Image 1 (cartoon, protein in one colour):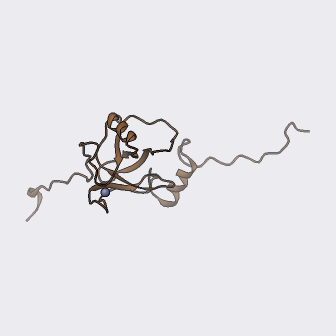
Image 2 (cartoon, protein in one colour; image 1 turned 90 degrees about the horizontal axis):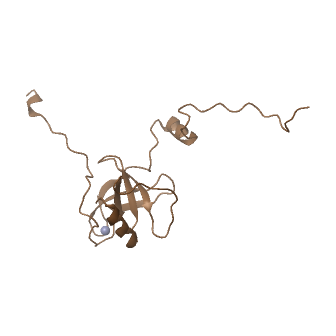
Image 3 (cartoon, helix red, strand yellow; image 1 turned 90 degrees about the vertical axis):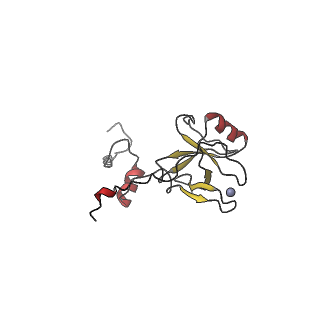
Length: 156
Ligand SMILES: [Zn+2]
């Protein structure tokens, strides 16, 4: 007689990839051939459909996402506190100009678990509110820098 109640089958083999990679990331990268990203796509500069102000818009999460419309002006920790007082959603900006992604940091009335770096350590922007001035004048670059063309390399 054995000491265990059940005979356990052999444990399943570990999925390929680094051991700290979640299985859903491995499955996503295997089926799509692309790297798993934070959000459902890039945040692109677009004019607001109501007031025509330039905004950075895109999904704010990779699951259960909302479309975010944010003013592309970087906030300091003090200005982010002002955004919280004004009940404006704040977003963290990831990536480089032209391929930004947004994740939500603060939603009015919703407690999001976890710790977040301060606005000094990352780029934080606030949600767009039509016909209101931006909270900051530190505009972030929304398009990649243009490549300079060297006219001496053209053969004609
Ligand atoms: Zn607007």
